[in-house]
Length: 341
Image (cartoon, rainbow, N blue to C red):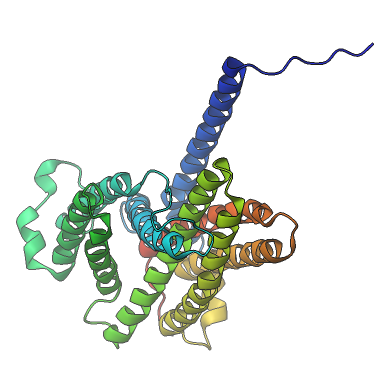
């Protein structure tokens, strides 16, 4: 004679939810810790056997730059997807329910990362050993110092806007961070620096929209699914997927053009394996290719599966691949630029 299990009571259900929530939190913490190892250990690994010298504190600089990039992606993605959610054909209200914003926390992390990078610039691009090593006045005397201060102030203003009644105002300080990063990556002494700045500007903007947008879209879908509104969630994911195709095309085009500026076509194959910058770039290309393949898989499920929300599984994996690509991007900024042979 079989025995049936009694139905779960409210206490049992709440306990199960708490355990699953705690498990997800632990998994996220583990993934964040693993992702932090990429910028910390990445410069040394990429430089191994190339004969190139590693800049002092390259791992710490790469980690700070990774945090800054991630802090930029989160609010940009929220602004982007929240706008899509309001215009999505599946929503029943001009003000649909949205998850709690992570933008204030992201702005705080970005502010601290930008402050750390400003301290690095103030000590001659070295990690400061003590407060006396930091020459704050010297920041106003150099181009890199002024850009570092601009990023610090921009994240501070973005955080205030995120906590205000008009969080959409964040778009202006966030745009200032993107412009500052594009200018920093291409000093005035570089050949055709304006072209490189424009390419980086488009590349970084589209990358932030893609990675941050997908992360927030999945958060919105989880909220709407809990409220039994799967049709609206599928419509939002489909709308995001159509825009993501354009973003991926722009990222690919600007990335190829930027790579050819750094490494001429006749030397690119050798530099992809023989230089630290080339190795990190190759790793980033592979991660973006994996993310693109997962995006195609998610799009096919969205169109053909009986339950369109099964596309969330490959989309979550896509977020992971994009997160690793952001970490590798941080490593790229701490490596010596390839020599134009």
